[in-house]
Length: 378
Ligand SMILES: Nc1ncnc2c1ncn2[C@@H]1O[C@H](COP(=O)(O)OP(=O)(O)OP(=O)(O)O)[C@@H](O)[C@H]1O
Ligand SMILES: [Mg+2]
Image (cartoon, rainbow, N blue to C red; front, side, top):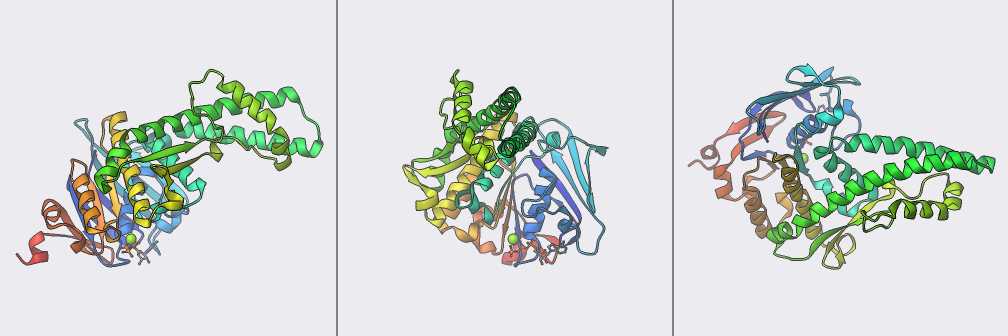
């Protein structure tokens, strides 16, 4: 998948910008606060219809303006181009595919597949479990357009169950038959999500050891799915009964707190280098490379699922890696995948790679393509 063209209007500090991207490596450089991350954020927004760093859509609209618009021209494996467009007016978001209004967001977000790596991603390892669940949900939903629907269904039944648990604790009695029907739905809905997440982690584990080795020269990197049901074999025929039994065992505690204690909303994942848990024992650099590895693994997974390579967005990763790791990473990404890199300092990037890349300078929300000779005076 290639994003050939991107236009942004009134997005963050951009009034208007229009760029033609290379299908290989694109490097955006500029000083702090010029709009590098904003540009990547606009691509993220075009992909997911929301931002990766702001929960409030309206903050994306340029100060003083009434709307923003982002347009992308995509080239897929099919012979046609696709035009994606999102217009955001205060609290109203409209999505268009080839100029037609598009209503199904779950479907839409499979159209432009991106993988983004940005400095806060370290929280995937260091942060709280809900960050890792959000990460899982975002990644899986890119190739499985059923997943978000399942997740929404789960949240509804979870709310129903929690409401009923609260009611039981107040009234001190309950309709056993009704609660058992809720539980059946709850179990069914949870298991579907557990299984999809478990498959995703297995697929990641098939490829990450090699990628981590390519980036660091170290063996033994893997991810563990900490499922709140403590199940390892999801094909176990007894799984529904095991789930039921667990719910029966924790019924008193659930009633006391008035909420569900086992389910997809309690899942977590852990990152290991051999038997060292990187959250507690990894160096900052190791943690960063671990997250990068997991992100790069998604390229392989997305390829496997829909034969389209995603677009890789790397926000300011080079400044934090030593020279050897920088070069290993650059070598890895110069395979045939469209990549968009931001950096404050072009010196971070190997000269050979720069020669193969399209370079853009960003200054106060203005993007200017520059030729390599203009930088080196060659
Ligand atoms: N809604 C908005 N309207 C206008 N300007 C905005 C808006 N939101 C953010 N900005 C401006 O965008 C700039 C930050 O841009 P961005 O985060 O892309 O910087 P950057 O080039 O990535 O910098 P760094 O190298 O520090 O990461 C700031 O000057 C900020 O004030
Ligand atoms: Mg930035």
